[in-house]
Each structure stands twice: as C-alpha cells, then as structure tokens.
Image 1 (spheres, rainbow, N blue to C red):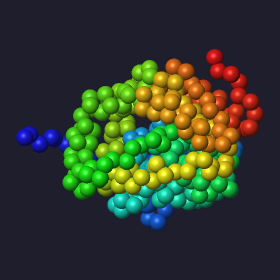
Image 2: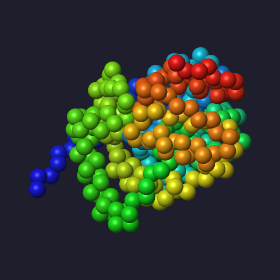
Image 3: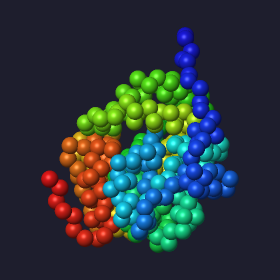
Image 4: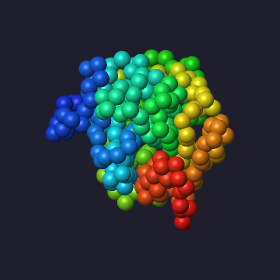
Length: 297
C-alpha cells in the first residue's frame, strides 16, 4: 500500500511572523490570538471547527463602528498556539480560556456569538458565567454531534484519523471540495478562502490538536450541554439551506431554550457570516440592542 504524502507543517513562529504582539493574550504561557477592533459594547466572536477568526472578515467592518469586537482563534486553529495537553481542547477548558481572555481585554460583560462547534463553547461560557453575558447568539449550532462508538475512540483509531486528515489537508483540491459543503452558493473567493483555512490548520501542533478534539468529541460533553438552563437572552441563527447543521436541527434546539429568538436566513448555507454578512449584522445589531429587527427581504 502506498503511504500518503504529507505537506510539511508550518512552524508556529513562522505563521505568526509580522502579527502585532498586541493581538495576542498570554494565558499560562500560551499565546492566544485575540485581536480587538472597534469601539463600543464588547462583542466576542467564536468561529467553528476547521476555521478561525478569518471567518468573520466580512462581518467585522459592519459591526466595528458600533461595537468593540474581540476575535478569538480557538485552540488548534488560526494563530493561537497549539497546546500539547489534549484536555486543553475540551469544551470546559476552552470556555475558561475565553473568559480569561475577555478579562485580560478589560471586559465587564459582553455579547457572545458562537458558530457551529463554537456554539458549544459559547453555551458552556454562558452556563458557567451567565453574569458576564449580555446576550448569546448561536449560529448554525452543531449541538447534535454524535459520540463515536467505543472502538473508534482508542489510540489506534486516533492515529488512523491523523493519517486520513493529513492526507486530505495535503491536497488543496480535496480540502476545497470538503469546504464547499459549508456553502449554499459558492463564495466568490472560494479557492483563496479554503487555502487560508488549510494553511492555518497545517501548523506545528496539528497532531496534538487532532487528538485533543477527537478526545473532546468522544467524551460526550457536547451532548451533555444543558441548553434549557441558559439564562442570558439567546438567539439562534440558521441558514435555510444548511447541509451540515440542518434547519430541523436548529429548530429542535430552539425548542429546548426558554424564550429563545429563532431567525432563519434564506438562500444561505452553514457559513452564515461568509454568505450573508449584511443580514447577519442586521440581526445581531437588533438583538444586541433589544429592539425589533427589520424584516429581511
């Protein structure tokens, strides 16, 4: 059998070369990428799996004149330093990091937005620190991730997953095809966007991050999130044509959250802020301010 060829991982110091030091927060020796843009009430944006804060590039200019935006790259992605301890990829640990970053950034409270897998981290923050959250927004929340069977949670299976993931990421074409599932209408810069994410995943520490997430998803913690106990006002945003987190799944979650606001964006897939940034910004502003939201066309 021919062993797959892997592209080399980029050294972490090389991937962050030229990035201003002020864009990082150090948490127990780990550099967390957490740039701040704009002025006003604080808004924290969390991306989903296999993405990073670049995900919000089109939404940022629509909000930063009115809000102080804090973008955070989650462990294993983007410009955040990859931890070696698999426990640091758990929902609880990452939620704790989010809280510590916001305190370092001087936030007394903040609006919290999470997309897909990042919604689970956002909900965990809101459950453990409700006093910090002015409002909570879950976009295409991936809350029904099935726990893999026991025979896929051992070390051998993790090593096989590592080989498969490195092989897929080593091919721009294969990775580009995989990311296309996140869109209803192809992004006009789809190739460049996919290559950005691919390059910022293939960074030193990739193997540790993959094992950490395999452990986190196999732990069952995502399935155990008690969404019914959320105290902050909460809104779910769903893309009507989302093929990864379906509209039915979003509606099912909405039924669990008392007083939740549920909004659907038409002609939109999983990557809401990349596909429909203006509509997302409009809904967020209305929800943050507590007023009515103008009906979307």
